[in-house]
Image 1: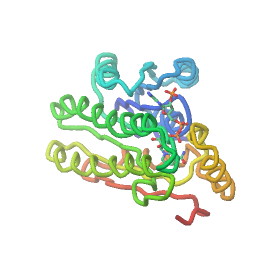
Image 2: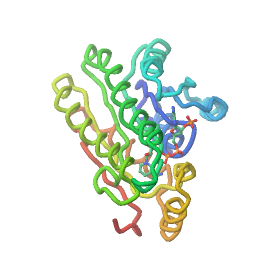
Image 3: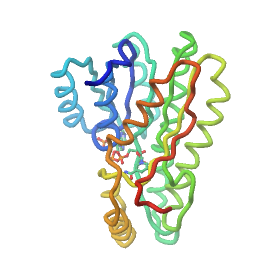
Length: 250
Ligand code: NDP
């Protein structure tokens, strides 16, 4: 039986319509948090909200395209308006448009920068006034092993994920005195829809083969890492978790 260790807490989970975000929203709700879930695919959010409500959770589904700055501010504002506060923001929405630099479409680079980094920066900024006012809050940012190690054909994606790590550390230094914690999770290969959107066919095939050669992580494995971070006592800030499949070398 899951302990309701997050009872009374309010969380906002971005990218909750699939993969890591869906699994983490489920874990936060099972731990007793009230959860706002955001992404573009409203049908998927509604299905998840129905499922979680059936098990007694308090859930708010918010359709939003987080490439748009005002949408990041809106999801924070709607969460605070609906639940009265926002304690835990999990910035997870992201895309991975891999390609060699020579072949890359700069529109894909822009889209990754705008979603993976800028959106996360804006939603973090939007969450701060309420957290500072209450002297309590936790921001969890999903980076990647690609935020630690930069590989060929992943230049743009790695730039965004290194960016997440850099932003998060500066954020932590600016907010810790207000009892606001910042954690970064850096997953290796997780079995989700992420690779389906790789535009460069040879890169997608190579990555699919690489991921297929190992026992990949599942969304719930990352959800467990997030849950670990946000359920520590107030004096503990888990700054960073690098989590790879056992079978993943690099
Ligand atoms: P998924 O593709 O399953 O999930 C991505 C989520 O982001 C979806 O909910 C999607 O929802 C949302 N999203 C995409 N574009 C937008 C947008 N414009 N506005 C709002 N939401 C958007 O992949 P994962 O679960 O794997 O990815 C989650 C995070 O984990 C990403 O940041 C990814 O970089 C990171 N990660 C994943 C790894 C992996 O191996 N899978 C490894 C390391 C890190 P919708 O399409 O409905 O908008």
